[in-house]
Amino acid sequence: MTKIKVGIAGATGYTALEVARLLMAHPEAEVVAATSRAEDGNTLAEVHPSLAGRCDVPIENLDAKTIAGKCDVVMCCLPHGASAETVHALVQHDVRVIDFSADFRLSSLEVYEKWYGVKHPWPERVGKTVYGMPEFFADEIATADVVANPGCYPTSAILPLSPLVKSGLIETTDIIVDSKSGVSGAGRSAKVATLYCETNESIAAYAVGSHRHGPEINDLVSRIAGAPVQTLFTPHLTPMDRGILSTIYVRKNGHSVDEMMQCLRDQYAGSPFVNVVDHLPATKHVAGTNYVQMTVRDCGDRAVLVCVIDNLAKGASGAAIQNMNVMFGKPETMGLA
Figure 1 (tube, helix red, strand yellow):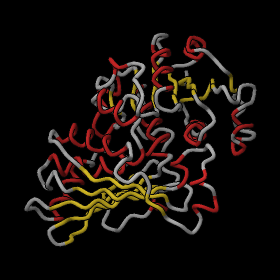
Figure 2 (cartoon, one colour; figure 1 turned 90 degrees about the horizontal axis):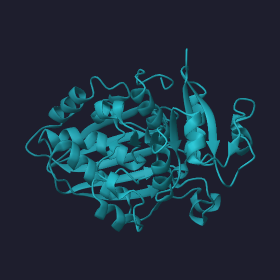
Figure 3 (cartoon, one colour; figure 1 turned 180 degrees about the horizontal axis):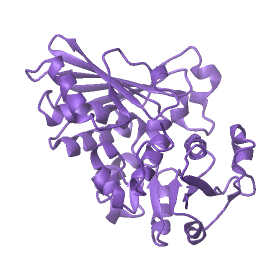
């Protein structure tokens, strides 16, 4: 059996660690290359000690042609801007790419450059790259050369909102998305706001009205549902390692919560990782997994949607493995169940 050969570009962060960890459990894929300018000469296990004894792949400062020659697919775990440059170079050498940055998620170049504050290095691909959510775009993912891996917060909002908007069960305005994330969502680099003394025994809102995932939520829900949507999104940092809980407040459009629950169950009946549940979901219910739990509660003229994911799994690296499986004709759950 020939395994899928996977490269990891930008191998030092939490998402890269999670990709490597998941791939070690994948029966038909293996990490064969890893790149990082900062850690050139070390191995993945030396940079990520939890991989000790299990992953001795060297980290090298490889050019696009070299890494493309080694791999069938590259997981690009670089920040926005730098990621698009690398993805562009890789695609020129006929290797498929799953991009973890926001560089190819949005439909509009103008919106991207406004919110990310950079000139896009590959502008002609903006709006022409498949969004990596197999629950809605599996056919396009299967043949794609580049897949835009979804944002973590957007995943927790797009999945519950899109079917309800598309079915006309909720109003498309006055949607409030209140999300809380573990500290790993801020990345591995040192920042004062994510130091232990700052986050322990505390919860804090941040980027109020200015978080870059807000436009992604609006864009993708509108794209999937076929109706323009505006949401008010506020993220919060909570003192836990991983997980996202989104509490979403919507106005009922003359329909019941039972209808909403049935709509979600119908939409995700064939989706192996999305579970519509009767209980109130908690982040512990999905920690370390690629699963999603969501439910709906009645609240007068509003309904409250609750959705939980693991930000490093379904919110990043697990979704990337799911996308890789679809790209190479494997069952979506391979290496993830």
